[in-house]
Length: 93
Image (cartoon, rainbow, N blue to C red):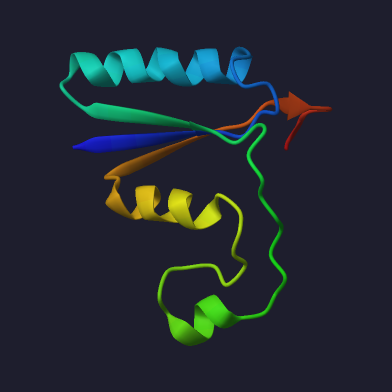
């Protein structure tokens, strides 16, 4: 079993990453493999609403040149996904 953690914070090793790693510690004690992806500093573009992913149904984004397709592949391989986001003004980023 594998759990993928995605840190949505702009701070690579800040509080959000610490909390994800805390959960990972418990999962690893149970023999579950973990992997952390830090989004901060990675080139990611927003959705352009081109609908190519919907039309092709190939589980890939048509926007090339950023990290998203690699992250999608890791998400598809994972048995569980843990999303971490800092809270600013009592809202998820």
